[in-house]
Every structure is written in C-alpha cells, then in structure tokens.
Length: 432
Ligand code: CMC
Image 1 (cartoon, protein in one colour):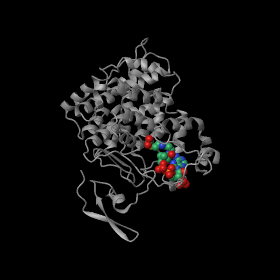
Image 2 (spheres, rainbow, N blue to C red):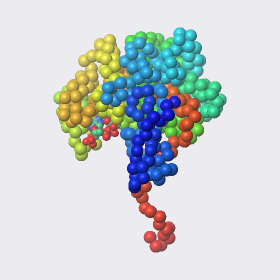
Image 3 (cartoon, rainbow, N blue to C red):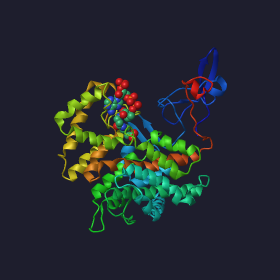
Image 4 (tube, helix red, strand yellow):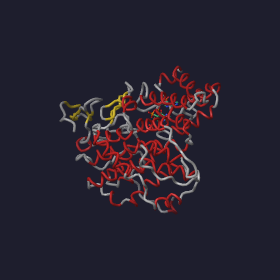
C-alpha cells in the first residue's frame, strides 16, 4: 500500500483552491488523488485514452517508457528471458517472489495436474464452424469454462480463487491448441504431463496420432521465451478490461474471456498477426519505400504494424530479446534467408532512420518479431494472437488476484463529458 500523502497539489477553480493529495510509489511518477474532486468541486477530470491516469495501485509490473525498462516484481525482463522459464515467471507474477526449489516443484505439480479440459468441452468446441478464427474459439471456450468449473467461481473464497488461477494457467495451452487443431480438422491431442509447459503446448499443436513427434528443445525454449516476454504488461487495454470486468464481481473465467476479447484488436495483441500479413504483403525489400510513404500519409489509415507503443518511447525491451530470438531460431532452422525476415530487418532499418518515425518516437514493438518466430515454427498467422492470450493469462490473473485482495477496490465506473441533447420533451410520431 502507498504511504500517506506527504504533499498536495493545488487546483484552483472558479476562485476556490482545492488541495489534492499526492502519493509516491517505489519508482515511477507520483500520482495526484482526485477521488474526492467531484464531491468537493463538482467537476470530473477528462482523459480519454487514459494517457495521464493511474487506475489502480499495483506491485506486479513496472514500465519505464523513456528508459525502455520492463520489470516483473522488480526483475528486468532481459534477465528473466535469459535465466528463468515461464512457469517460474508465473509463480513470480502471482505470488510476488521467485520460488524456492520446493515451491517450484509444488507449483509445477499443481499446474500439471490441471492440464486436461473437461471432456464435455470437446463437444463445445465442435459447435464452432471449422473456419472460425481461433481467437473467437478461445474467447468462447474461456468464457464457457465458468459453466464447467462451478467449484472455482466464488471470488470471495480464497481457495476457489487459487484453484481458478491454476486451472486457467494449466488449461490455456490445451484450449489454444485445441482451437488450432479444430481449425485444421485434426484430432485433439491430450496434454502430456511428462513434458514441460512449452513442449507440451507444441506437442498438442503439432503432433498427430499417426506419427511420432519429437519436440525440438530449441523451439521449445523459443516458445517459452515468447510466453515470458508476453506474460504481463502493467495496465494495458486487456488487463484494464479484466480489472474492470472483475470490479463488478464477475467470475474469473468470464473476466479473462473479456481480456481475450480486448486483446484481439489490431492495436493490441492482434498486431502480431497484422504485422506478419503486412510483411508478406510488402513481399520484397524494394517495395518498402511505398509502404513507408503510406504510413506517413495522413489521409491513408495504413500504419506500420509492429511499430509504436503508448508507453515505450525509445525502444521496447521485449522487441530486443525477440529480435535476438528470431535470429537464433531462424539460424538453427537454417532459414535465416527467409524473405519475410529480410523485409522486416530492412523495414526496421529504414523506419528507424526516417524523420517521421524518429520524431514520433515510433520503434519496433514486441509484435514486430514474434510473428516471424511463430511463422518459422509452423504456426499460421491466425494462431499468433491466441498464443499471446495464452501467455498473458497469467498477467491477467495476477492483476485480478491483486485487485480482489485490495480492500480499497471498488466497482470501476468512469464518468463522461456529456455533449448530447439537453433535456427535451418526447414528441409524438405524427409531430416529428
Ligand atoms: N505507423 C505510422 N504512424 C504511427 C504508428 C504506426 N505504427 N503508430 C503511431 N503513429 C503516429 C500516429 O499517426 C500519430 O501521428 P499524429 O501525431 O501525426 O496524429 C502519432 O504517431 C501518435 O500515435 P497515437 O495513435 O496517438 O499513439 P497511441 O499511443 O494512441 O497508439 C499504438 C499506440 C501502439 C496503438 C500505435 O502506435 C499503433 O497503432 N501501432 C501499430 C499497432 C501495433 O503494433 N500495436 C502493438 C502494440 S505492442 C503490443 C500490445 O500492446 O499488444
């Protein structure tokens, strides 16, 4: 919890001055508490897009957009991507500290004990059209989990909250891989608890009953790193969606389904799919200037997908690690001359030198390189955002848990600047 306010900000409005408490966190900008402003001064603050608004107090993830720094519980993402692994990162995000060996073993056991989906869910999947986007299936199936796991939907029971947490982390790889298998008409592959988290996911996506399948440890490591890099990202759009949904007391599966829906948009998690489609559409290095020109044209809605970020204004630290991973994976697969990678590298080089992108501080973000790795692994573009959702599930749940444990949390209910018609009397249809 933050300390009591040590100083105050002053707001003068129509001749009256109001004292607003100021709070400091451990790092990052101070916040001005305007919670009592409406009661005292009768005004709202106005910040569409929330560029200057802190919506909650949190001790999970910290981002310094100027420095290009991302910390999970204080640990820099680069160190976690190199030295840790996804399930350890899950533990860290959920419980606040790195686990001891015994805690890790216990957590892994709990997760692996919950990897199977209720068998009835297989029939639920079969209700979808085969050509449905896997994100639609993941969103629907996650929402449907509240109909299958009644014994972990009571948010006021800490034990049920814990069971729901483990269930979602454990079942998401099964759910996402089944959405994929369903879309390509192959049988569902059941989880194999002797495999690690990432290998199990790859096995459920790429093995078939008719043939032996061996998970390449290099690909498994790259997959695990993609999960780690996407695990949490402070109060982004989908996380704020989960928090807002949860503020009404909705059950955890419904809240995470809301997060999946929000993540789908191309300005957020959908950017990785849109980025690879764009790179393919550009096709060759000589066509890049044409696309740069389109991106700069105010009358053209086209944007360079995988570029720009609301918070990072120098570089996205996740993109750096991801670029290194892309080089490694493509090198090891012997496809480093992949034309998509070449277009991506050249596009990055040209954009980083271009005055428009430099001036607006537009840098490659995490989605710029993740699609190239996933493509090299054999995933179709439609699976990129579901994989992001799989990885972000732990972030959504950690933030959901934190919110439910915060005694000050209340239903989220923003207000507005109303610009519609003022009071008017109803007119009968014959007089309109
Ligand atoms: N290409 C061309 N111009 C851009 C781009 C881009 N990718 N991104 C921003 N701009 C311009 C924009 O037109 C605006 O120009 P002006 O000031 O002349 O009107 C200026 O830069 C500021 O843009 P904004 O839309 O006000 O910035 P924002 O903070 O609201 O949006 C963003 C951030 C990530 C939505 C945006 O940069 C974008 O649409 N990028 C492409 C989509 C993308 O890659 N999204 C993934 C984000 S990282 C993963 C995640 O969060 O899920």
